[in-house]
Image (cartoon, rainbow, N blue to C red; front, side):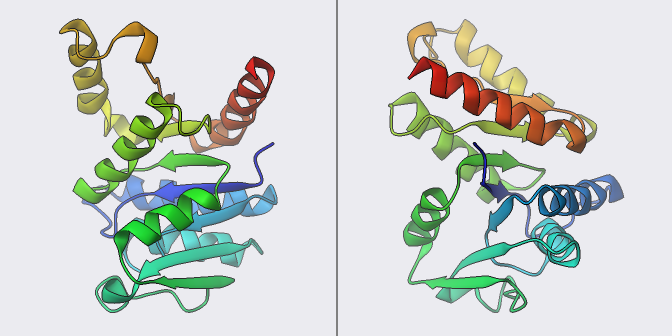
Amino acid sequence: MIRSVCLYCGSGAGLDPAYAAAAREFGETVAKAGVRLVYGGGGTGLMGEAARAALAAGGEVIGVIPRFLREREAQLNECTELVITPGMHERKQTMFDRADAFVTLPGGVGTLEELAEQMTWAQIGRHKKPILILDVKGFWRPLLALFAHMREAGFIRAENEVKPIVAEKVVDILPMLHAAAERAQLAG
């Protein structure tokens, strides 16, 4: 069962307004479903859009931010709970510990790194939590093509492959996560 979702996304808004719209829709959707939002604790960019939308819809929002990023990412003090960590490693571990699933919206290198880390941890058996990519207007298609290329080149072997779930619409995210969690539970 998915009770909390960790969101990875940009601390910037990007150039296409569709990214911010998707972040707001995601925040509102999880809040209305009673699913807790765990995210990076910032008030800027897509992070801030998603968190504010979840809070406005009555949701629970846990922000996790390292001490040194509190000003740079304009920590969102309105979070239901704001966890200040000493550094990035503690931030990522706290977010992992508090999440039942991971969702990635558009973002930059940091977002990509967080997604890759969760895929790596799943690949080495550290967790079986669902990992979903929201492919807003094809944003992640180049990355998905790179994964296919890595597979074809023999660097992702079938026995170790971790396939993230890919959704194109926010409305599909929670049903896809719930289905993946059920499959993982049945597989044991």
